[in-house]
Length: 207
Image (cartoon, rainbow, N blue to C red):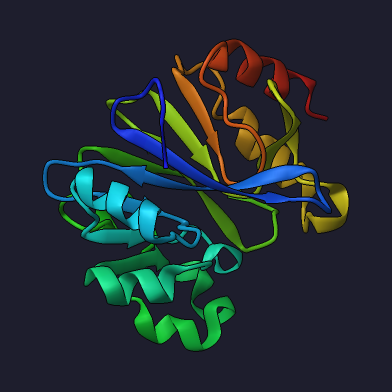
């Protein structure tokens, strides 16, 4: 598990040779208990670091494809699982493990309200993908719709996996104009320098 320039955000990854990118999971440390976001498996050393960083009381899953190691980690940590209501059907049997469903910021667990806002991008692999706006960190976290296959450059999910490109582009353009310290990505290299400039370039180029 790696520290980042954002003191509260730590990352852990698995390399995907077929795509030549990393898949990323995140630990967001909070006073009320850490939040694992789209967690990948953690070995013994990773679990030890997680414990040193205060553990995790909550697991936030952004979409069904990013369930990943949630089942095992929720059990071993005694963590509550929260996920978008839109994903209930796609989660299949895993939906039974979700304690808390959300559709909007006001639905989030109490420990996250005031620290995390939700934006929604439609037209991706699921009905609506949540964009996590980590308020104090000035960071966006995208799970699928935005990715990076070349370090330092953002790209849109490939057209073949989009259900409505026009709507996805419109939703992403509405996110422009923010001052960002980082753009965190489920797929590919996260941006920790030049995040605002690269995000503005990315949305301006979308057609």
